[in-house]
Length: 459
Image (cartoon, rainbow, N blue to C red):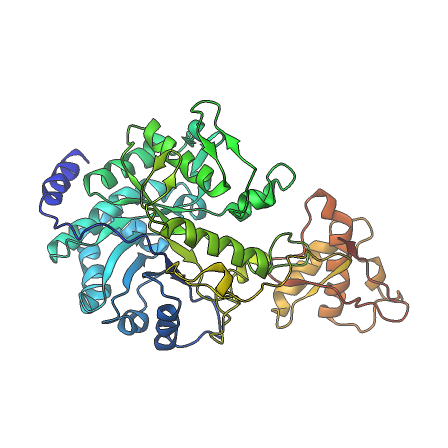
């Protein structure tokens, strides 16, 4: 590791500076949808949004080809599943760069190469020791091919922190601080790269909506502030608070000068009926205010790093209908899959708020909700989910037994829809969800029929 760091330090002396990085946000171009436009059309849409850069989650050759000669800065990604093999094999690393990057550079302006996506959050601790060695391998491969301007990093979610409030208490988790994060920070310091961070005030707010003010999370708080008792710094929004916690955590490990790059941030424009705050009004408000913040001149930075530039990517380009998880996961887009705006936004920050059309009101759904099988669900998986719901007791599936009111029609989907609603109604108060590994959906229309009465949740 020491030899690698020394060689990287020598190498970094020969890097040509490409000037100050632009504060104008880019966009994350995810592809988890079966109804998305072609790469060529998508690139045109990205340009229409006036994005400065684009991040993709792989090295899709069609997308990289479509990005040729556009002037858009591009971030590509090494898939999570290749991290371990890359970390152990320099030849494999070289071949991966030669196959996935070299054919497109420099016509496609690749500027960032991210080694995995939220690896600490999404992989087991068996992978973690391979993260930084993989970053070293990839950086060395880039140097072999003379690709000196491409920054190497990896993305982290906020759950890498053990403490985040107040911001000055920011501390990395004990299980990763010295084994993973500190060597990573050494690499980023020597190579003059960034700590790529995914920051979602939406999730922080929904975890504690009583104590965290919604306007504070949306950059809309005129008179709501939080003062850090240790530093006296005053915070006017949740985003700054979260970012500064990471700055302080890095400083605590001896690296106060590493810059943060916002790899993802955004707000959902919709979600499941019981997901509060996920609507077009709030999404537009958050993202427009974020653009306004980061593009303001002179640069604002954060309370702990005033005047600093915060390069960024907003998540995401499209609503992606194949993303797993709660409904919000499929509703982070700036655009519908048909290319139309979900709401107006200008990533250059030059359009005044008064020039945008009036937004719909930010209303959360109130009323009864049922949980049923989503259209097109895999029947084998539904059988397993039905078995699970029925095994939880509380007479969850009594009404779908032979001779009971909901036995007919005698189909897996109909029985499962009743069971899902029954399960959710009985167990929501202890954490039960209407998800069933993506097989369920919430609806506001009562599916009851005849003597078969579905149980519901009241929001």
